[in-house]
Length: 404
Ligand code: SAH
Image (cartoon, helix red, strand yellow):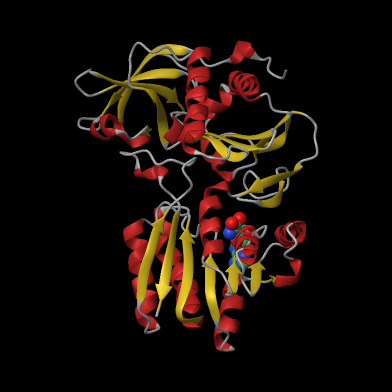
């Protein structure tokens, strides 16, 4: 099994990170990050990625975690217990805990997220399971250095046929980590077929976006399918056709699925065929903003519209522009819905929080003179839990709206 390189594993050091006065509160209430700006001083030697201890300004122990001063997030907390060692058994224990949680909350474990970073006490680590295969991302320096141990533990727990690394993620730049992708255990055909609520999808773990498939929207796709009987549906930002296939399978009369990526649409077409739905889904390669504008101007009408764009606000500064982007697409969608139509509208920007998202929706509704009722305020599927006390772990909003 892969591994090796154990000589260079992070060490548990005696280095002490002393916080500025009053900065321990959020950590004690659940936030798992220490920002660089919250640190008063550091005593003792360490290398980036090593375990350090965090103390408040009075010298009282707060937490232990791994350190990387290159990042704005200087320490990521691993434990609140000063006596819990951060060693191989620690990681094995946390990975088992994450897997046991999925076994508790999910009915179907074939395709799911088995590790969701901070929310699983495994900062910076993402592991998605697609059938007999795992896709891994180590997005923080500390966890990246523990990778040999983590990969070996994953191999022992899941006995996967193959493991693929998708560390070609821009956030790694912020940690001073290089971009890389490839087989950790393999090679194997990176196009993997999974089942999701009774439908089959081809996931390309090598070329697809992120880890290949957006597992967080799994249950929202199912719900959209249940509401789509007889409907004329528009799935903007369709990626590999998840909502399009589920609404078609749910009895939609016709579905138009739009995406800007030709690669995504090629997979989407093959997914439609795989499920015998190709005759009811029309795929369009276009910028969704342009498509929505042209369709609205042409007087098109739909019974259901799904908006699942990429994150428009990657940081707080980009929020104002993002708000306008979200408002534009939601406004055009509302305009095109028949009275009593359903809008399934999503945002995966953490910075666009629920309050702001609802304000934007109301703003859009008022501009087009429509009345909107919230059918459901939803989020990600339960394998992407939110850590109470750490709002940063909540990112996906999926609102099901009834538009008059
Ligand atoms: N709803 C999908 C996931 C969507 S991810 C699912 O359930 O799997 C966001 C998608 O938006 C990506 O496929 C990306 O290619 C596409 N995208 C990004 N910007 C776009 C734009 N301006 N117009 C159309 N598609 C866009």
